[in-house]
Length: 254
Ligand SMILES: Cc1cc2nc3c(=O)[nH]c(=O)nc-3n(C[C@H](O)[C@H](O)[C@H](O)COP(=O)(O)OP(=O)(O)OC[C@H]3O[C@@H](n4cnc5c(N)ncnc54)[C@H](O)[C@@H]3O)c2cc1C
Image (cartoon, rainbow, N blue to C red):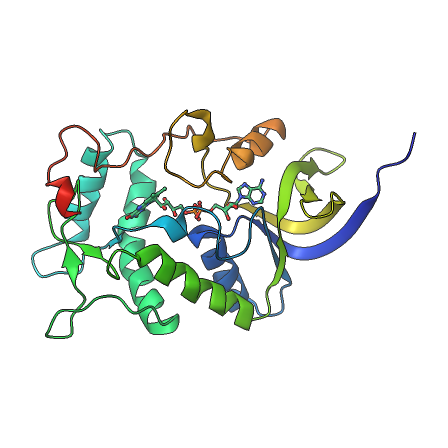
């Protein structure tokens, strides 16, 4: 039987997935320590795949006079029928303020503005305040284009059209030592050794007959983590608040 040929690769940080989460993580890691080697491995083409690019509505952030992160937090918790992890929701709403400034001032996103120069924030389903920052209805494209340009400009290594298949643990089983990937173009396997591996592979809508998210997200990250025996948090799928019954704002305005 022919032995499996593996292309070896070594990196300090390996990020799986290249949506908003993966690209931001790569940029932040490099900013924290420029000496680190960082590699992004992604199933599709960097900047073109995943759901972040599909975002039309916009980015919810409490910036306006009369709004607050506490109010944004409560909308998030109530919108999720009290199922969201509250610590994560708090990180989301407080981090959003920082992130939107980073997107504009460091990465160069052009979001729509009011005549007085402040960011325009529109109404969106599930929000009790007009807090959705947007660029027309092409917000995700704006964010992904700027993030991708920053990743390209900073020389972060990338493996495009590489699908992560399995997390390989150390001999004693206490840590992840590497990731097995397949190069979708050639069929060649890659064994990427890394000191740290970040899963930013998104959820898995393909279990449903009808779904709007990008089809390249097929629950791989969660499956790999479970197969490797890693502790996983219960994933509660996001149902778009525009179609959730009882949405507190008119969804057609979102
Ligand atoms: C149509 C639509 C509209 C939306 N509108 C909004 C909105 O207006 N506002 C809002 O806040 N949110 C919106 N969302 C939700 C939002 O898009 C997601 O919550 C967000 O983009 C998730 O970012 P992410 O980086 O985690 O995942 P993604 O951007 O989906 O990236 C996942 C990445 O993982 C990669 N990947 C998957 N499996 C593997 C593997 N095995 N190996 C390597 N790579 C892999 C994928 O190729 C992709 O690059 C919308 C979603 C959809 C589908």
